[in-house]
Length: 338
Image (tube, rainbow, N blue to C red; front, side, top):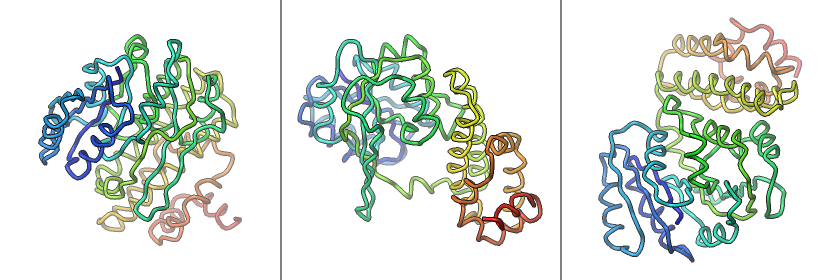
């Protein structure tokens, strides 16, 4: 059996579409849907209950809990899943119609993790295929996954794997409830540190709906600063992973640091968009650049070219420029030399 774990929070606008994509699988036999309702106050639970009543041939489990976040929801989902294999689906996403059929074809007794591709869906129809590796279907070495985790962002999410449940339990792999951002990346890194047997399925299995409202919903001063601080902490923590993987080199630290800066650019832009005074924005930027983890990340870059290249919006903003002039003459000189 395959257990599909869906964390659900205020998902009334799209959870039915998600569930229907599972029901409409070419092969929907021996499936379990585990919906973990994370304290939703909208009609999400009722929609799931109605779906369960109408589709008695599909096993649907509904777990109610207080709102403690997606990491806790996924951990509870793992604990309650009865399937041999687990996959994670976000409540606003879908599976391709042939997803389960293709995954079952790829399964064998010696496989711990299957990695598959996804399709990013946008409202403007500018859909983008996320192809993880330029490889045929087959077993891949874990070092190839480490390279991808260090250098790119395609394996930052947890919804692109089918995982043997016993592998998760035996290695005591859990989502870290302390993090509001990057929890998927930590889970994935812990999982691959345990050296699983990995099969790469070079097919589109998952449909990721880019939800701008979801991305922007926490545009508040306290939550923005918290996300920035956690992102900085997360990527500094990642230096320990590359040591574990015996891949600690100047080149890999630079790749990792540039990846961190690219992620941070969105959060830095969020500061500019906050409805607070210019003085408060400057103080937030100052706190960010004086954060010891930010200093560590920048230290591992041979130049701030990544920060410059990826942050054109920010550098044209007067507040940001003012801050840079006040507190980082070194970066300003590099900007002028570009």
